[in-house]
Length: 317
Length: 320
Image (cartoon, rainbow over all chains, first blue to last red; front, side, top):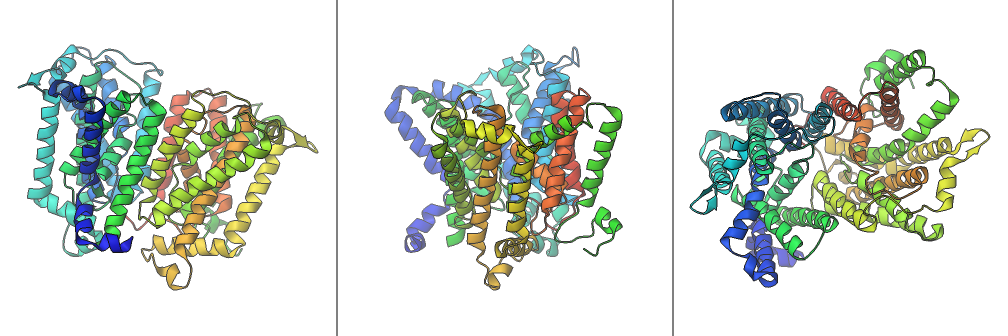
């Protein structure tokens, strides 16, 4: 085993994010099982559905790079969906909702960052607890029933296309590129990389570790708010269940993309393909007639597989 | 032994963690409930409370074992659901009961192996098995139903000398866990490994000849088996298999462990604290039910307690 892993070709292969392999395998499976599914229009519809996840992944990968995690996305999405669909703000315009959503995400992200960066509470517990509180609150406010309708404009915007590419997909790609620039070209990006690599060494090199962690979580909150807006546009109704499994899937897609708690060789494009993998996975599973339990098992196996792949890579390098 | 009462309440750091405050909270809630309501302070309600709290107590004790070695097991809830589903497979009890524990041990083994051999973070490893086990449970039993062997039902619903069986379950589980954590070499090793992990010297125990890998793997196996015991108990109570009965148990166990003063970073933890923590949660649920608080608000309050409790624990590590 170790001899094989020490082989230079094997080591080079291990450096590639697992998401690329999984993406190719799923694409090949689909090509064999249903070749006629592989056209741009059909794939566009499927990929469009995964955009909220894809956006959430961008926030997740930033916090995972500083060796943290954010599971509060589900609560944020639910709360913003409730704000928009409950009719608590009658006659409010689109910009108002956008600002409200971003402010919500900012406040929750800042709170997460404060608890994790300054109070040093376990990130899993804080973000999970925040999510539980928000979910419980929204379900209480709406008495467990879906609140109401979303202003038409959200869904109309979601359904637009630009040169036959759905606008949400385009938006996702642009956002990914923006995060890529942020992480690779800015001082903040360097701080994130050094804090993730070794927080103590970063501290002694003059990196503001606490501020970086807080900023990373604030950014994740903001990005979750954007994901919430897109998700609300996509389902076009109020819901008390929407997006609850998205944070876990976002963690999975990020790990699949080769980023795991600290060191991230895959950058943002590995996780980008990680999200695409989940889009394809659901298509393949549906095509093969596998139901919900099978999907759960497949998700678990993929997360574990990617994490083991990553663990093996860290051991050998 | 030599600590003063104020030390216990303020919780000077010992290997036992800070468990005085939750005990005080538990007493205060009980006092308030017995003054405010007539139903609370009856023997029937108290025994009922013990029976309601028991699954959480058992599963939380299992969670404590992995928390002591700086880990976390998020698959606890799905192992509980899985256990009830397996028990309701309409096979003889002599086959089902051993099978449940073998399967639970196997799940723990996978968790432990992934974490120690393949360098997977505990949260990720147990999250994956949570999904896999939940999926298998839903295949076995898509909706709740089936019948549980008579012996399992009899084991939780009878009473001996006027004391209901659930009380004995609690005593046996606590004695077992006490022996494991404080009365054996294995327990000492767990605290040594956990203390090393918490202080950032992960190889500390190894340097003294304690095999950390094997002990950590065993901790996850023990945790899963405790979850299976909780599942057997629950199956006897609900008399059927239910794929969703263990939902949110992983969080409740973590809350109970943290409430009991156990540090989530490892090395410090107390059995009595954990049991008190689980009882506080049960008391709160009982009190909120008596006060007609909406179940959604109860969920939010549980989250708030978790947040408050871990927010008050200071630790060196930042992040996970």
